[in-house]
Amino acid sequence: MAKTASVNARIEPAVKKKAERIFANIGISASDAVGMFYRQVVYRRGLPFDVRVPNATTVAALEELEQGKGEVFKGSTRKLFDELG
Image 1: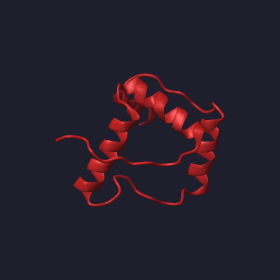
Image 2: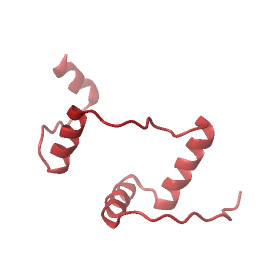
Image 3: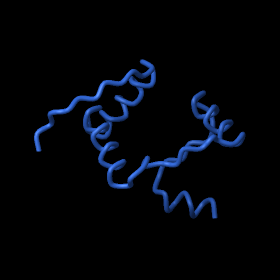
Image 4: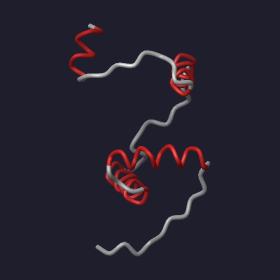
């Protein structure tokens, strides 16, 4: 099917830059990502993620992550959960 519709959105430049860096790392364009989001909305008949106000613990963890702090784990998820369990 031909792509004939456009979507225009305003977004904070820093968020756009970070997201596009991630898209590049996984080999997709911003347009591809937006198309995937729209397809998931249609498939799920709603947003493809929960929309909630984060609790204080989650906010603190996100702030720690943004500051480049916190524990970093490299390896398989199986190994991570084995170490945590």
